[in-house]
Length: 268
Image (tube, rainbow, N blue to C red; front, side, top):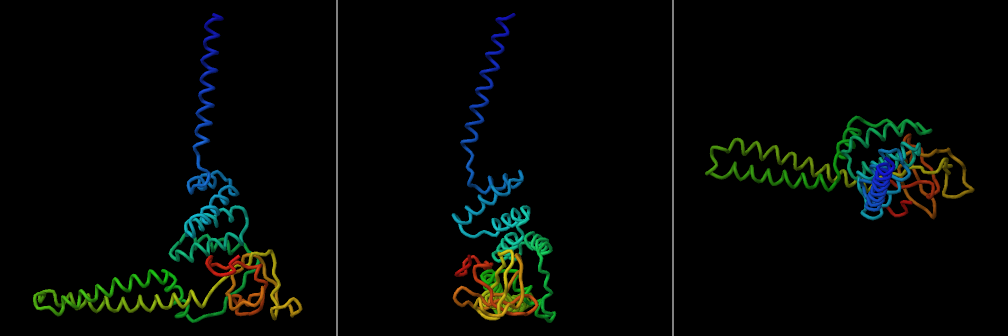
C-alpha cells in the first residue's frame, strides 16, 4: 500500500512539474507588444497595460484610427476624459466614418466640465461640413476619378454607332456619373480646405487661463478645463491663439493643449 502511495505521489509531482514548465514556456512565448495582447489586457480590465501597448504600436507603426479608438476606450475607462477625447478625435481624423468613435466621443464630451454652446450656423453650412467630413480629401479624389471614368465610358457608349441599342442608358450613365464626379471633386477640395484652415486641439491641462494677448501680463479672459475642443488660429512664441465653440477668441499656452492632427508641428 505504501509502495503504491509512493508511486502516486511521484506521478502527481512529475505532472505538476510538467505543467509548471508548460506554463513557463507559454508565458515566454507571449509577445507583450502586439495589438492582440493590448486587446487582451483591455478585456481583462488592465487599462494601463493596454495603454502602454497601444502607445508603443503608434510609435512603431505610425497613426492608426483603430489604435486611437482603442486608446480612447482605455482612457475613458480610466476616467481620463481629456485623453479619451483626443484619441477619439484622432480616430475620426483618420477615419471620419468611424461611427463607434463618434458615439464614444459624444459620451466622453458629456463627462467634461466645460459645456459650451456652439455658434449657430446655417443648416446648409452644418450639412456641408458634415458631408465633406464623411471621407478624407484623398478618398473624395479617388471617388471623383472613378466616376469621371464612368462618365467617359457612358459618353463613349452614347456616341458610338455600334452601341446604338445602349445609347439611352449610356447617356444617363454619362450624365449621372459626371454630376457625381463634380460633386466629389468639390467635396475633396472642401475637405482639403477644411483640414488646412480648421486645425483643432484639445485642452490637456486640468485648467487653463485664456489671455487677451500672448503674454502672462495680459488680461485674463476666461478659464477652460481639460477635454474642451478648440479651433487653432495662430502661434506666437509658446502661445497659441484659439477660438472656442461659442466664437470667443483668446491666447492659451501652447503646452496646455494638444493638436488633434498628430503630424502638426508642436502637437505635444
